[in-house]
Length: 201
Image (cartoon, rainbow, N blue to C red):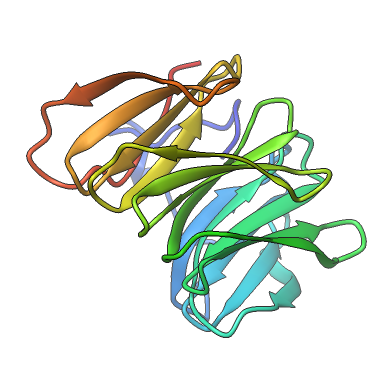
């Protein structure tokens, strides 16, 4: 949950209870910035939104014919990005509950999506071993970050928006200059796939 929701720890783990059971196999989950919505991407080719006050489903977005692999809310909570096995990123308008646009250009499954802190860019990581950066307002591909030798499973912007991190099946994390696309450094040390990334606040 978004801050200031309490974290699960050994001290309060006994208080954790199941609030709802999803009726689908969810591939990825994300809370909205205000914590009022939970988005889930699923093997049933849909994106679902859940009301966290009562855990009732609000809307189901259907626009793909293959599995939805990742979801991410924009910083202002007005948009939702989803990636899929169709090699695309879809952008959803939550207020009007419709698809806003589709970002096409990857040649492999999109495994991870992330908004920049200002909400102007979306980054996506793919089976094609690249990270693509997209302009939210126009849908234009801003740049492609190439350098990984394995599938890119995770992407994350730094809190100030100046860096973009990517993790891949080549067991590395790469840091990129978000404004130029220049590779800053490679973090090596893992002996397995890098499936998830997060910057400290």
